[in-house]
Structures are given as structure tokens and as C-alpha cells.
Amino acid sequence: MMKANEIRKMSAAELEAKLVELKKDLFMLRMQHATNQLDNRLQVATGKKDNARSKTIIRENETKERRRKLQ
Image (cartoon, rainbow, N blue to C red; front, side, top):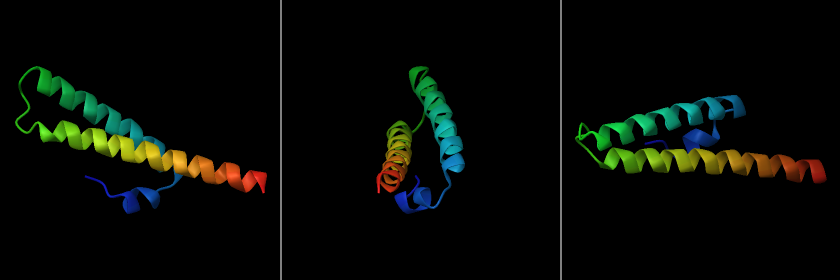
């Protein structure tokens, strides 16, 4: 599980790469869950939360950039 502070320290390129990685991991977890190979079902929820947390911080950064441009 990633903390928001850890994610905020990443650059935009790192965030995009991490988001792609999280999406792949979540897909694999869902596949394992569907085929009953997943031991801990909470991993799916954790993956979803990490994915959402990363998207939220990417959106925050985009909003900050827009505000800087408008000022």
C-alpha cells in the first residue's frame, strides 16, 4: 500500500509509469480472483485504493498547473 506522501514526491513521468503498473497489477489480481487463485481478497481492494490515490494526485497536480497558468 502506498502512502499519499510517497506518491506526491514522484515526478509526473514516474506517476504515469506507476499508474500503468498499478493497472496491470489490479488486472492480474482480478484475474486471480476470478479463477479462485487469489488467497487474500483484500489485495483487490488495496489495488483499487492505490490506483485511485494515484489518479487523485495526478489530478491535483494538473489542477495546480492550471492555476499557475491563470495567474
